[in-house]
Amino acid sequence: MANGGAVVSLIIPAYNDEKYLARCLDSVLSQTYKNLQIILVDDGSEDDSGKICDMYAAQDQRIQVLHQQNAGVSDARNHALDVAKGEYLAFTDADDQLEPDYIETLVKNIEGYDMVLCGYHFVENDGEITDMHLDQDCVLDAHTFLQHHLEDEIIVFHDLRKRPLIGSYLWNKLFRRHIWGDIRFLPHRIMQDVLAVTSYVAKINKIHCLTVCKYFYYKIIGSATNQCGVGIHSGDVLIIRQRQKDLVQAFLQQRQIDDYKLLEEMNLLVLLAYADIFAKYLKSHAEQSFDCKKYFRDFRDEFQKHYSCLYLCKNLKVFSKLVLCYLVPNLYCCLWRVKHSL
Picture 1 (cartoon, helix red, strand yellow):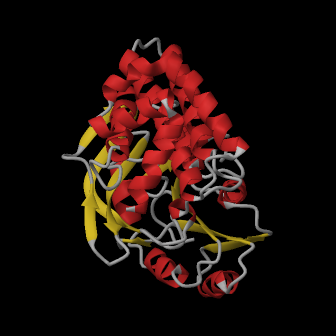
Picture 2 (tube, one colour):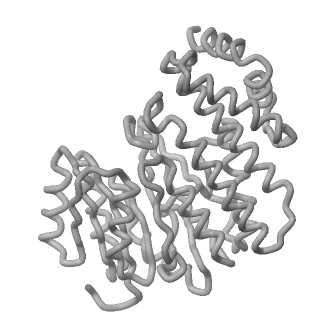
């Protein structure tokens, strides 16, 4: 590896990304910060992604390629963590792109802090670019970060913003390897980055937040994060939110912080996760299935326990949807069907 500066282990899982992988890797190899351990994990790709990884590895000794049978992005990242040797950890998605000074900017600004994050360019399918970032550079403690983060998630769910400004993304953040420790990604789940980032934040004190946008996030039709429908992962969003709620509760207890609103925000995100599941079943015309009916019953129980969190709803539409799901779920399904048929 090139000399100069601490080693950054950059983890890039790839699965059937042959259309975009070269663009991503070219931006990685063009980084102004050279002391990189680039870990490519070919997750059993059925296209030429594996060959592209090997081709780039033959050109640059900093690249290490791991080939595995298809097991999902969580397993791929866990595999990479086992061989990561850098002082810092960074993550990139194989269909995205980095500004040339992405790593350099993060490394320079993590000094004195436990984590640093930057803004990002959100690239729509039609090529429109929106810069997503906080209003100003700032330093947040872990508690304040969680407050901003959960508020951010709720705002996006109410369609008041395209994407979260902070997000539980891995790719706009730099982590310290010794703090990351034994954190692993939950296998066979979508949104597994939510738990990983929340677990990391629960361990730390200071986060440096930058407004500068150094990462290009591409909204790709058909990618894992943009798929919907009924299947093995239908309930993942709910499982992740419930486990995130457990992490937040443990964090507050450990640090002896009394924050009723933060817990209520987590309760609301759990209820909203149910709404996300209902939408998937409705889009698949499977609202009469056993699984969907069970989700409605579970939602009623959760609603009865935590309906007080509804005051955090940002508009009447979402508030009404949750109340209707609780009071008359069949009517909610009928109204949803009429609206979308029109």
